[in-house]
Image 1 (cartoon, rainbow, N blue to C red):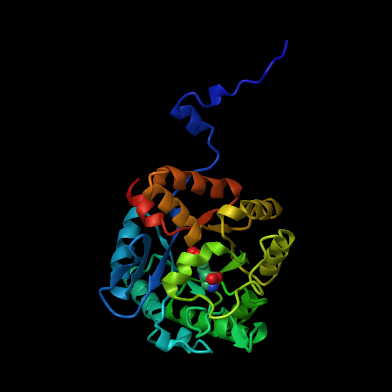
Image 2 (cartoon, rainbow, N blue to C red):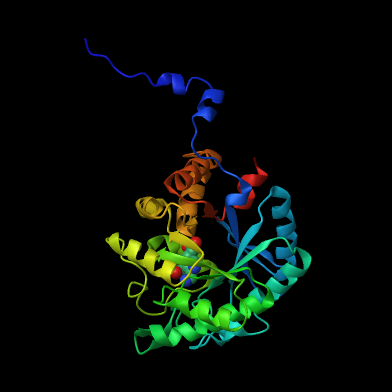
Length: 324
Ligand code: PBG
């Protein structure tokens, strides 16, 4: 007689399923990105079918009030710049009229309890769209580091709680940590994009901030999707350089990487970044009637938690929790 194990009793009703669930979601797990532009009263979709928005500082403040009511208390700020303000040295990254700088100050003043995180990369501000300083066709890692450090200090002085280097320059966390400590900002934390793959899923984001590279691609500095072992090395390097939070990005296609790092260091605070193209796949499918957006994103967010993420960066947080 063949005997078999019985599992259905784990699933027989909602209460039993809840009791057997190993992960859950809270608005406190979520980080809401903002794309900030100069001006006022701006709240616009970047294109009719893409639900990513540009905000000016005033409209961002209104949106943040809504987020706080929903229980979302962490935001990640990105700058968007007009072509005429971009140059080879990304000067606008540390300009006092940069909307990120102005937003940090205004948000801190109006909502002292929200956690402000800022993206540290020069691609929104470089004329060539690369994340590093360029000479000929080459990306100059070491020449980029002081600029990232200066940008981080600029945000710290304005009141950022976390700075979040995404340029994938070697040594970026160390350079930023040293600069912050030197200027008595040891309290400002670093959420590093530790693992960032050269991915085709960043398309809608690049359209949003107009940062596609004018030549080549980002494969000389972002990770190769065919390699997993370097992810652990990148993570360890960021631990040594004293990062506080570690992002894995993209998340959907790299759950193996997230899980691997979680297994290696169960106590590290890991963050899954559901990038723009990943979110748009679900959003567009839902629009076409192929799936239910809430059910699909719930399943994906649970997968992030199951794989070891404590925090989730997604463009869908505000919509998701307001429809709950
Ligand atoms: C900046 C940066 C990118 C993303 C976050 N920070 C773009 C890139 O590396 O090209 C992508 C985020 C997304 O697609 O949602 N370097």
